[in-house]
Image (cartoon, rainbow, N blue to C red; front, side, top):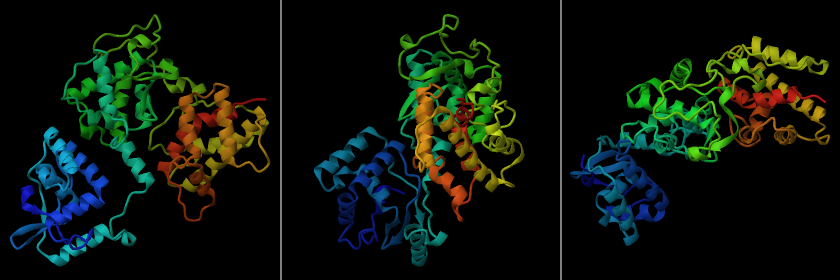
Length: 458
């Protein structure tokens, strides 16, 4: 339908009765100005809206029942003179001259007024104990960003393409699906495998830059050639399968390429310290020459096992690794708990037991580290405070990097997946149910820290 044939509802419940459509639009700009500005920018950038407005026919006119803000923004983008002030007119004109604004959109036409009210009731009057629209909590929002890479503050796909172009590894090409690249590397696990990280809205190398760039070049070339496509990397399993195929080819960085400290992604190649036996490869590298490409984390247990293992593993602790926990008398119970969490207790059957033993293991590891390193604590020190003191000591002893520290500090904050509050609830709450989707990444984050604590000696 033509946008200019749609009428913003002057009886919209958002503002109550207005004298005209112009007054309704003016109200939205005056009382919802910041939201209207963001919405208009989003529509202009996307070149479309993602949900059809709900409309009905009234006296030969199509009146909007749901989606009035979207329609108002579209009308203003198509005709900025409808805006109420010169500043608003300038704003909408600026967007309309730099973006392709749709003049036609799809709408849902409903003829039954009662049906319209039922729809509005379910969309706009809260959750209604599950009947209405349920808003995502922080965990759901975090899961969405982790899965898709969307709404992340760093447009990772774009950043990677810019870097590869600047290093003359690829040519600028609009056909490169940057959104797919962002989706593939939306999770910390996937980013680690290609040798990069995102911290405080900045991209860093975690492995030798030329090795990481060779892997990223291969990925971009694959995507430019239609492999993988979005459907191949829609879920975590598809991402893992594709990255595994690159690892089999010897394309991905391994532990030998890890940096002691992260390096800013946008530094030039002149700033890199390059080992003399590892020259920076020129051009696109389908078969980069990496030393010891078959080395995996299983070969280096001193690193504490994998940073993150398969997201659907049956046990909390990944199996098949020699974690080398010291055989000390004071760690006898810890070793028994570790064995249960690694070999015997499985999610689905023993999820509650896993959660509680995880909490016990963490506390015992921290207490062991406090005792062996003589960290100053007091009798009523909370686990959170001990944890932070242990982090500072491990950084001081250089067994944790600043990148490790940034991830581990999230544990004592309000991050839903790795917060100390959540861990406390696993043990003490009568209503909180532990989830494998929370426990696995929590372990993946804490594993290196826990091993450092247990391997400490007087």
